[in-house]
Image 1: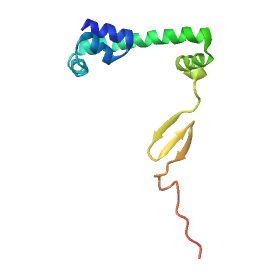
Image 2: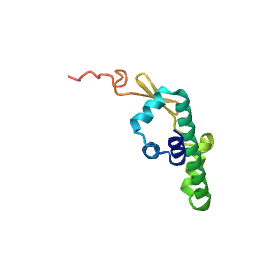
Image 3: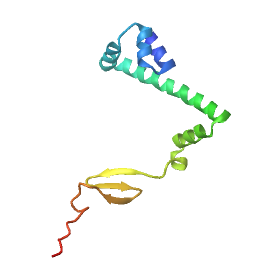
Image 4: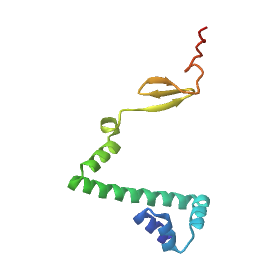
Length: 117
């Protein structure tokens, strides 16, 4: 399926790659599931398409877009330029930047207050 992989690499579009190769999407995905070598080639073609997209974004960022520069810096140097909020999920707890917040479904989060007489 060289036409499929070439088009996938050039466009990152499975539908268009199938059209160029003269196959259905179902056939492409079935082969990906059944053939480990083809699945690896598919992933490589997809990664190459993303590399091309990153190169285009970088060129545009340098030429004219502060917003693209910000996104590229955040993606490539997350520890320096990324958002500083880290959210993790623990049973009945939500941890945001090392501060534990009780979840609504945690009975300890909203203790029952006895009614006054």
